[in-house]
Length: 149
Image 1 (cartoon, rainbow, N blue to C red):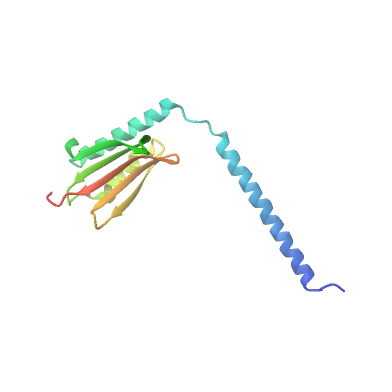
Image 2 (image 1 turned 30 degrees about the horizontal axis):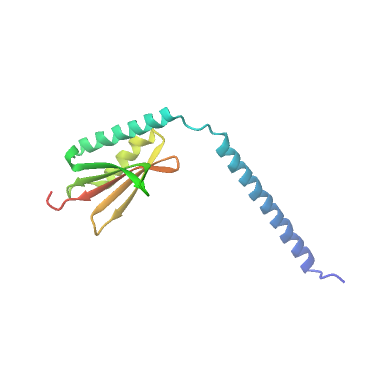
């Protein structure tokens, strides 16, 4: 004699599990196909975007009244090798509104396929904005509050 109630219940669970597995497989294949169909960006397109992003940032810094003497720039390294990311340290006064700067910067870099991700260290009075393009952070800007300003 069969289990009666358990057998149809088990059958339903197996059917649902099979459907879910098929959906997961389809989503995995669709995701892999979407990434491979995109053409890689040319070196000149990458340079144009980076140049445009740098110009947008410089323009915003000038609008905020931040002089070039308050901006320190260097190329990031890992194990002594360049990473391709530019890092900057910007000294700002207490009146600097990081949230509005972040918003304005985000609007300007969006046309270059980039976005801005910010973080804050309240105790140290440092706000860092990372410009991300594709899957890589291409520029990090640390805004450090100078108590004397």
